[in-house]
Amino acid sequence: MTHLALKNISKHFGDFTAVRDFDLEVKKGEFVSFLGPSGCGKTTTLRIIAGFEIPSSGVITINDMDITNKAPNQRNVGMVFQSYALFPNMTVSQNIGFGLRVRKEKESEVKDRVAEMLSIIHMEEKANSYPYQLSGGQMQRVALARALAIRPEVLLLDEPLSALDAKIRVALRAEIRSIQQKLGITAIYVTHDQEEALSLSDRIVVMNKGEMEQVGTPFEIYNFPTTVFSANFVGTLNNASAEVVDPANGLISIGGVQFESAVDLKERKKGDKVRVAIRPERLGFASEQKKANVVDCTIENITFLGSIVRIQVTIGKAKFYMDTFNNPFLELPKIGDKDQVTCSKEAVLVLDE
Amino acid sequence: MTFITRLRRFPFWSWLWFMTGALYFILPLLATFEFSLSWDPQYPLKAYQRAFEDQRFWNSFMYSNMLALTTILISIILIVPTAYWIRLRLPQARRIVEFITLMPFVVPAIILVFGLIRIYSQPFTVPFTDIVILQPLTNFKMGTNILIVAGYMVLSMPYMYRSVDTGMRTVDVRTLTEAAQSLGANWFIIITRIILPNIRSALLSGALLTFAIVVGEVVLASFLGVSAFGPYLFLLGQHRAYEPAALSFVSFLLTWLVMGLIQLVTGSQEQAAGAH
Ligand SMILES: Nc1ncnc2c1ncn2[C@@H]1O[C@H](COP(=O)(O)OP(=O)(O)OP(=O)(O)O)[C@@H](O)[C@H]1O
Ligand SMILES: [Mg+2]
Image (cartoon, rainbow over the protein chains, first blue to last red):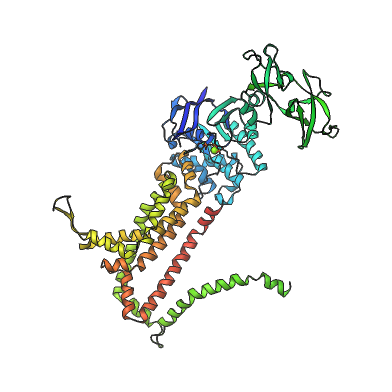
């Protein structure tokens, strides 16, 4: 059942369009991420849901109730900010209980709820600390508890982890996800970090210049990007301009080298310019695995990245990356060697130029 | 540790400048104190006794205190919401407002007071007729009080506005406001339970500066003809030798006492706001 719906939302600041025709339905308990580069309108969309911005056009509903013009303090939407935004004059408990006290709930219920939230974020012993006595990760956990304490309809998170260092980021990310699932709360998560979006979300909305590029599960977004932008933005990607050779059999040519693709090309004509995209990990040396596409290449460069080794090869005139898992018995080629690489038909994505 | 390294560790120049500065401020104060005790060698506190015995001292001092408190209260009521709204919704108006708040530094108090007298020594009439609605403000006591408080608000505006604005910058009122709103708080709760407590120290320092300005002010008070503390001290200085010295020394002590108290009250607050 649809819990939160954004229908044709647009937002203009003067002549500038920050969000255009944003259309999304979110189910109860779903975790949706907005992913995109800086300035693409993620925060603006989130602030429209929170009520801090009024959309220029379009409608927002929660449980089929139109909330487009409701004030932020009437929406029952929890928000977590990048800068934590804890109230410096209140202790951890007072911060968490603030929303409940504003709602004039009974003091005994406030106490119980605060205790419950403190145990969920594992910070019982910090109940009486002030924000300046906490670390960044602890502050963000308190901010999360404070937003959840009011049992919001929707939880909004605007890059909540980007001010934290890498280790804590990964740990807290898992914690956010597990709390969200435990409470079954609908969540919208804004990030420009693809790894975060891929690991956390039920669905991802890839955004670019105020528009939705693609909506799908992390699996779909990564494996079947529908636009060059979302293919490029999520993960590393080889892409080269190409020409359709035989639409019926899925044959295309990258600078004279022919590839066979599993993508349906019936809509396209022979000679159409397209863009071909192949993930580095889908390419391999022909000697190791026999696949549909076997093409000649020259080794250009070899980069050691820890668990994987990234090899740059030239196919025709285009440069491609190829990733192989690192292992101690790996026999690496030499730069300048001629070799053959291969990939399956399914690995060859064909996108609009 | 050798003598040389210890000498290197000793921040000679910092200390030299610090001592020079300290002497510059403390020597005149010591001289004043010394002088105030020298009226009667038998009875060193005579100047203090005389000063405090004078009923006009207490009257003018209490009157100035009342003026200062009123000025502080109305300034806060006007300036806090203004500065808050500018931070929240009208950041582009910041420069203009900052410029306006600096005007009292550009326009001397003497010009302000003559302007006030010129305009408010005429009765208020219904436009285009001679029907009088209100007598000139300068002609009755309450009217003069209103004028002088308004004038003091202008004079203390640069200090009050800047303190409040700086206080709001250090706590990022904008995000705090949004956080509170999303938790269901209305404007009244946001101002009284989030904004004011978090700019407490800024308010106190603004209030202290305002207090110091109002209690010592001479020009406005004497031209508007009120018996405030400033003109009293001025007069005393013209006709007596020892009492003014005693009173200046006491006011210094008072100021330090208040500042110490503010430090005490706001110590933890500063820490909270400074930790980011
Ligand atoms: N109040 C405003 N007035 C004018 N332009 C604005 C306003 N708020 C946002 N914008 C513009 O809208 C665009 C989208 O901003 P938004 O904050 O939504 O980006 P974002 O995707 O969250 O980026 P980031 O990853 O950097 O946070 C930006 O170009 C920004 O300059
Ligand atoms: Mg943003």
